[in-house]
Length: 388
Image (cartoon, rainbow, N blue to C red; front, side):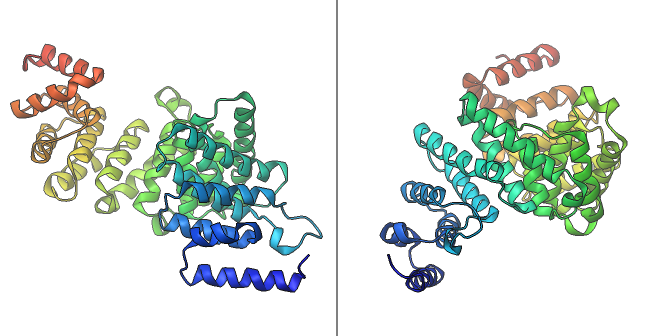
């Protein structure tokens, strides 16, 4: 066996090569068997930053990481696996899934992510608030791919433990705005396992409310709003706690002040969330409409259709915004079925006439969308519009 001093020297040499910009994939292929935990972590982070699609080497690095033991007394330092290393690995793997078209590969990656996440719970690895939020986000993304009962139990157990940890007041106050956004993105995901009202209340009280005005970006706040809207659907609005109602008002105020800092899609999501929370007021609505209508370069067709839909859902009728959305779609000369469905529904609600050119475009798209077809049929019936 090589002496410890040689191993440390070798690891330092590999680390320097990685830091100097040498190809991390090539280094991993040549030295995977002797790489330390920190160097595996560094190589995976470099590959993720490069948006590498080298699926094989990322999977090999992740698999090698699983072979190391987590922190225990008496273990050599180069074999210690911390919560940060695990969260970095699951984040890199989860991001990789979006670039992998093959279902079997996605399944393989999802299982690796779960294998890493389980170690946090089973081996009691110490994690930071950022690590916990990152692992929760990854679990929400891999859940659709793992159908086995044992895998689902592992996900639920990990999820519950991490939410319990982040939902403690003394822990929640350590959350940074970007970490809160990651946590909220996990909670609002269609595949979320949820969070208790008390836990989310602690996050709002300790991590969001005191920092909302001076530390949160518009992008962070969109995720917070989406999470709160998903926790308190319409049927639960009347029974929601006072902090949740106050949160909706605070988010509406933030949106009024920072209206121009939202991206088009971000503002669309934000207003939709405020509508669901019944927090979109009569001051914010016309202000948002004016900003969108007067800045065509900032809000594309998809975003404008989403905004028209959200505002129509709130009960505020703006035929001008619907016509602007129609104009943006015609300029782009293309739109997806979901955007067209929202636009025609909103036009129907507010009584705006859909231009014939847009109707023809929608008729083509509707051939592959039952929902758009139904929305157009309802418009024709109610408004005596155009033949289907």
